[in-house]
Amino acid sequence: MPQRRLIPITCSDILFEYKLSGKGIYLARYARIIGWGKYLPQKVLTNQELERLVNTSDAWIMSRTGIRERRIAADDETASSMAVHAARAALKVAGLEPHCLDLVIAATCTPELIFPACAALIQNSLGAKNAAAFDINAACSGFIYALATACQFIAAGAYNNILVVGSEVYSRILNWKNRNTCVLFGDGAGAVVIQASDAPPGSLSFVLGNDGSRANSIYTPGPCGLNKGPYYITMNGPEVFKFAVNVICLATKQAVKAAGLELSDIELLIPHQANTRILKSAAKAIGLPLEKVFINVDRYGNTSAASIPIALCEAIEEGRLKEHDHLVLVGFGGGLSWAAMVIEWGPRPKKL
Ligand SMILES: CC(C)(COP(=O)(O)OP(=O)(O)OC[C@H]1O[C@@H](n2cnc3c(N)ncnc32)[C@H](O)[C@@H]1OP(=O)(O)O)[C@@H](O)C(=O)NCCC(=O)NCCS
Image 1 (cartoon, helix red, strand yellow):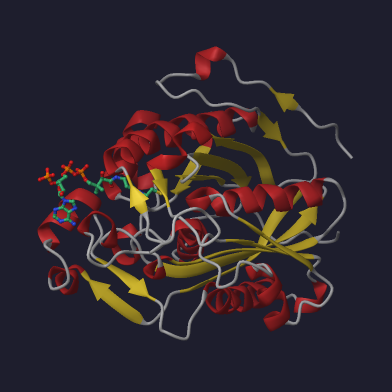
Image 2 (tube, protein in one colour):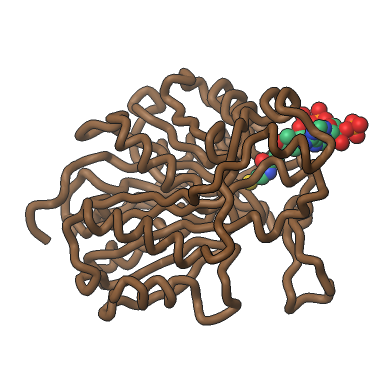
């Protein structure tokens, strides 16, 4: 197995006011995405419908966020049930039976139970009886945190086939009378199956970070805390906006450098989908043309940990990725957390 390379990031990488802690890590045994799937609930909630709920307008929402509509889970849908739909689609693309999975990791902050984990329910519904299962909560950065965690099990030689899902039902933690938050979020799920490979293509590098001193910039209280509820999202929008633009830029640059690449080598950036203005500002700050940035927030709003796998799935379905393209996934959100991963796109490995 090749030696692990640790590439330290120097102070000259710190271009803005936010400093990133941690190192860019170069991965030595590769994780290749061999399956992908998504699930969006049927119910569409348009900006026009929101105009009837709160004092807002389609024009305001479109101009400030780029969101036109979002999906809302049915009463009988949960994070695990939506994740199972996305996971089944991903397994089908991968051509893998559920019993071949070694591990199921679910990224979510809206699980239906405090315990057991959402991943445990997904494992059972799929019949993935040989898989370990656990959840990761890193808010909207959760999917990349989960993917980077999965890559560690592969890099260590522990596991070969891992299901990573992001699934959220934010509609259940929104105050539908608060226009500051209820227009921004939506429900959905996305999943990937990753498989070990001793050679690229596959995951090349990642960056994970968190600034817990700013945990109160965006949070949702829970039933085990001191707050007696109701348990709604609270957010300082402008502060999160500024953080997001800076951190997308910095984390992307760190991950690209750790992969031994230049920004010009990147064919597609798939950022967490929160707001078109954030993504346009970040693309400008990075120096990437907007055509290289995948955006679908207009149709789904912010689906938190589900947004990146849903966007990845759509990018693949739209033919935006070809063999050996370099792709960056980048997320940000509650924590305040951030995460980025560089992947060389490629076909399923011939043998393990
Ligand atoms: C929330 C957000 C869209 C607000 O946009 P903004 O350009 O900062 O808003 P502005 O400061 O220009 O305007 C705020 C005003 O709009 C009002 N407003 C807020 N939501 C509104 C809505 N849905 N409809 C109409 N007006 C609204 C506010 O009450 C405020 O009014 P006031 O000035 O009279 O107090 C923006 O800050 C944002 O997207 N932040 C990031 C949020 C995010 O992505 N969170 C998740 C991260 S994972």
